[in-house]
Image 1 (tube, helix red, strand yellow):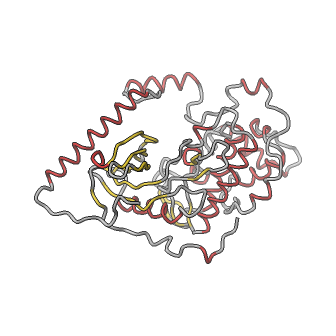
Image 2: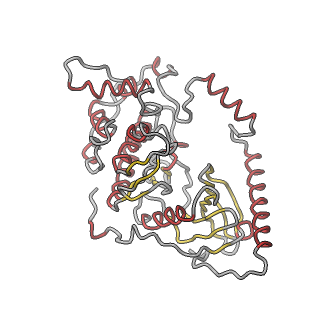
Length: 384
């Protein structure tokens, strides 16, 4: 998985800025489905009315995403699209009254999180994912970049046998060595050296952060479980892992954490290497990953029934609140504030309709404010 430096795009760090064409989203597109949504914005499956072309639009809200951050994400998406395991971003970008928008390819089978069961996806499929994900990250790293947001939600599935997956979302991607601010990073995937920092503290981007997140993602694929909720001393599972990790060279052996008993001895070696708690000791590359693909990754014995039924064995991937009582209290509170906790397709359609209507109102208001002023056509059209 080494890449010829001559083939690396020399313009990868020259982020292109241009004037965005302003359009009315509801007039130009029929919105078919909200593929994903969150604080980052919305991912929409749409049909362009003029060309009858289906495409995916990623809409980033202006109040939360700066134009500079939008240009960066769009630029890296375009530049990295050449790799078969990175999402294809099309050269289509524009803005509406409330959003910056660009287009990318559609993943018909959703993300890896929605395709994984409580016992994972099995050894064969996990190896397929690991091989492709490692290749994608090595390609990103060869361009002097750190993805910084490797998680199941950002791994898209294109074939049901996992023979084609693609890493997406370059919103957090930065040049190696860039100083970034510690925020509320995705707890489950953040390396311990990042979680050890206080909020708003600066730290340097390093490819070893991606290596850590790669290890967490593949562990979930194999077992269906998180190894721990967060890589911090106050997490008991991570504490036991630390003891095991540090106790490998002492005379008195330390018991393996329960979940790591599901992993073969050979696979444990590379997990312990990539999930090295000391950032300075962790590998910065996944280039040696191919040597492990011939090994067996899961332990030969099946998971004991009593362990499968032990609710404390497998931490939730969805919430830091691991007890049912805490989850129920949290869901009740969310419901009281009108936040959806279950999927209601009727409500989803109503939400799409309301969102379209609110976008039209915003854009009409803005047009009235700009009445009498001239506008310059942007350099980006809708033809891709």
